[in-house]
Length: 97
Image 1 (tube, rainbow, N blue to C red):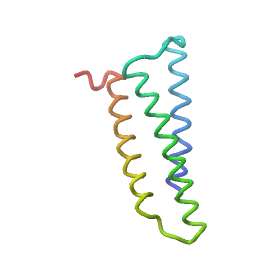
Image 2 (image 1 turned 135 degrees about the vertical axis):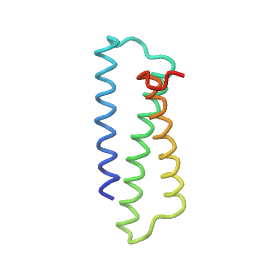
Image 3 (image 1 turned 90 degrees about the horizontal axis):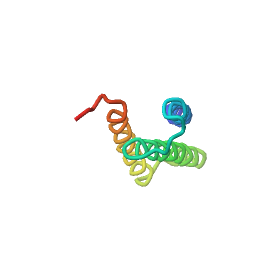
Image 4 (image 1 turned 60 degrees about the vertical axis):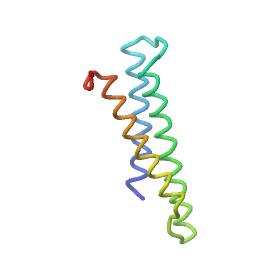
């Protein structure tokens, strides 16, 4: 459970540094295309991580093991994190194709 709260907390730092880079590099210009999609996915990832942490804490408090819904949300979160990273590669120029 500690890895989950660590991921959730670090996602907030990632969003903060991304917003800072947007202000610094683009002067707060309107986001569009892959950059906007990357930001939307990053916020969604952070929200999903916090939701997973909350669900896991609730299960632990009740003494239950996580159910199918928890693992389905975890799988969706993993795919969303991968897509966000993939988009980040395009935004940074690493994936130029």
